[in-house]
Length: 300
Image (tube, rainbow, N blue to C red; front, side):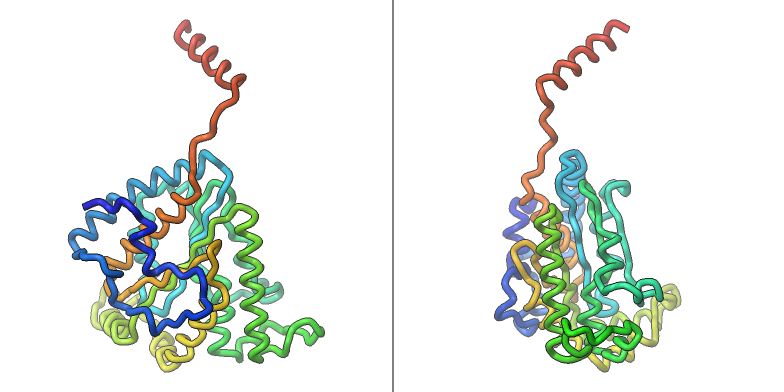
């Protein structure tokens, strides 16, 4: 059965007010109350691709909004495969994907928002950020020793690097940045692919045991599991501080990849449908010129 209301479908996962948010309230294997199985989910994903392609065409034609998707997750949650399966139906010319790794020396010479700001999508396009500026309040918060490479001055404005107030101020900067983007015509949607520690373990073992997946394995990812609780606390803090109606978080259950992909797809559709996109209406003069051009073509 088709999904008639994408916004309703993803409502259980949408967070717009983080005041009382806790990841503990969100199960990694939830289906959001939907009675759906894997085969039905695959069919619905294909239907969603058709709808998303039409919305992308409207986005490009209207040339008023840009769309920014931010994907955050623990290792092996499925960020790359989600991009592959969800966005495979869109026109590549209207979609930009940027994956952010450890910052380069040039990036470290700028403020922490710089490298993602220069990769923002222009009007009419969809931008996907595989990891983002949130790494600065997640990985760097769990590993504050990374702050040394940023050479932050004691300038009287911010609090001492690594202090509790410092992280609050970084989250405040992110919230201000997203508010500015939203006011400027960027529709922001942020996804946390919520995988359980047990499921992550199974996927990492699969990467070791399956020769075709060995290339995906990184021993550092196993070491990071030792910081699991610290990461969950950092995600809690980040979502609480930055969830807003203009920049919602979608906490997507990720233990079932097939449902995760469908939920991400429906969230994108819901956010883009809320833009009330339409093809531009031509002026009377432009319509007249179209008629003249048609006449000329018929007579040629």
